[in-house]
Image 1 (cartoon, helix red, strand yellow):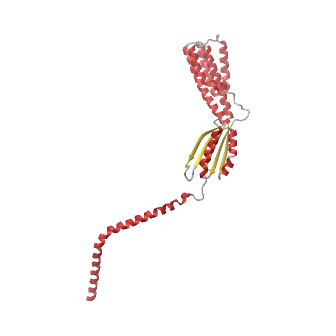
Image 2 (cartoon, rainbow, N blue to C red):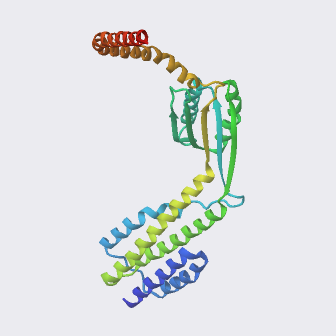
Image 3 (cartoon, rainbow, N blue to C red):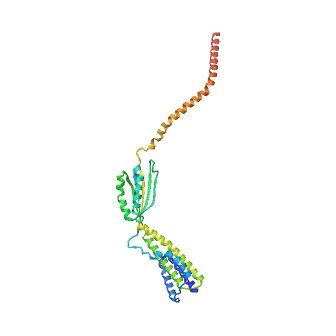
Length: 307
């Protein structure tokens, strides 16, 4: 029991070293190997325990069997971004043809990450397409892109290429995967060859589960990095050509002419309503005002005659 607990502590120390710097794992693994040679003849673990070990380690068998990454040349991830200006009438159809070309190549060669068309029926449509494909397919596709665009009456506005060197990240991650795979195998061997108290076996199994979880995480990161090297990302932005005079430029004038008749009719209607409201008062006011004016004039004449 004491020896089993000691091996668990040694495995834990080796796991910590794996996550920090792969070269420190050699001493711990050598010590584990010496301890294993000093142990008694191997004894099979109980059947229930073996079943649990198999369930924990089954998911991690893949990374241990994968071939090492070739680092004789730099491991580079290429990203391309191109902006196209096309007539609005053919913009959506051009983007759809590029999507079809990727799909026809098959998912093993090209995959559509994102495809979007905006304002397809409007005066200024736009579109977006993002692909991840094999480098050879991307090179061939881009070689004919400029000629296709010019044949459609458009032009290439910008063409950008970015390169990221992933050599160090891939090598470091592969080393961590290899070290943790070795540690997992040693813990599995410890469970299979030693017979002890249930608490000791459970402690080793918990340590094995932790190692397996870290191994799966690192293996996922390594797979993603290798995919970035084995494929290239291509992003296409489509925008419609700007017209010399946009149709919406004269929209206010057209709208004014359209509303002129309605405004005139409303004005005439308002005048009619005013006259209809003022007419009764005019019938009364005109005779009164006329009488006042006539009387004032007569008064002035009398004063003038009297002088």
